[in-house]
Image (cartoon, rainbow, N blue to C red):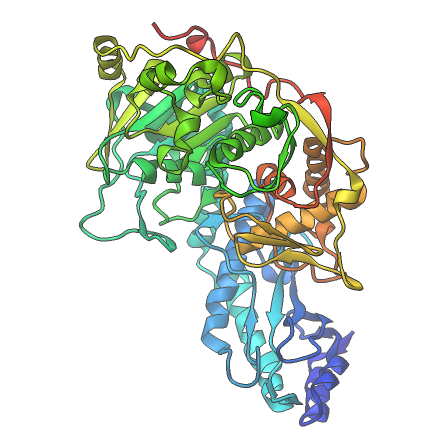
Length: 591
């Protein structure tokens, strides 16, 4: 291994030469208190940044073993190290002082969620942070002296301030790790308590804007106060008691006037599948892992999905038992989204009336009288939502503002009144009894089958020209070979790094498990099992530097595969069993 002095000499030697001379610095360097690995050097100042790693032996870093003793604690510590490095780097590195990405030194930037990422590693042997470095240039000429300042002066300062336990606020490190562990512990208790979600007392649910995920601040903020009838308490390992509103399994409606906080509550619940940083306001909003947000998605591609539980034979004899289209309508896309989520193992569906197809959600008495059932292929969600729960154990939480017919099928009704929740279940049942809607149920004798599909190997071609192209472009787009997968309507993708993880997971599963016999769900489960046992690095095409991506959920990865326009499938019979199983308290239809 070379030394820091060797690196400084090389940078001095190549100063003023063409940019490709930077290739001479690839390798590993001993800085005494840490090691620097330069794994890949960018070939051009405008190209993807240089990939590098800094590693500190745990004997020097000094992080107590309790901080990485379990997976939950390790992920929390790695997230803290990522954020600490970013804070320190912002004091020393200033991109833009030169051509292209000159002056950049950063790591994957987390948002409000705490996700398992490839940005940092912590364990008993060492702590390590994976960097993106923009080697400085004027035009395409090496600025060796400036690079020497970056790598031999400013980088060591950053490392000293962020990767040594003695340099950090020990209380803050411990609190960050313990919060993650507590959120995981709370989530693990929801099922046994008969709940699908928990919203902590004092939570701040609104965000500061439509394009920001940070909490709203100011005197207008109303802290969440659980209604007494739905209040529950949990015991978690570090904080102790946590009090809030529990949302029971079954069918839950969120109702109320416009701008009173209905959709804000639902968005917090959908984000509750992830853990959050302290101060986010939603750190004690926790949702079961199997929650999937469902919406209409006009124009999406659908491949071989059995949507017969919701849509029967279409005009001109179009078969819906293996429904395919290049551009789904609102109703067919929403039906496909639900069936795909069930196929992937969803245990909770989250819907908002505002983003749903009206004709998919409800067919009222007057429309039933005007258009006979034998002329209407759509069975509305209102007639399937209880069957979903009673037969498959799949709960639903939905925002309803204008369709009172759903009061007949609800187990729990929460009204948002000036951002404050009220349990109005009893009043809702009284209203439903006083004002019978008179419509005929159209759901049939049972929900219907959830068909499992097997992706065919020829669906997955990651090549573009002579190279493979797999990655993400922002939160809403995955690139796979020549295909551009639109995930803009898949609302639970947390950030661009998770979109990158989705792309890598699909490619990994395609190369190893999508063999024409393995189902979509099983192939992704096997790939995620490899990640769990071997780390996210297993998905990386790079040796040394694993890239900047975050662990995806199976549901969003499946959603990406389902939107791949080259996808070809064959059906494989019913999907693997009931994902949940109904609670006894909800085992009968409502009176």
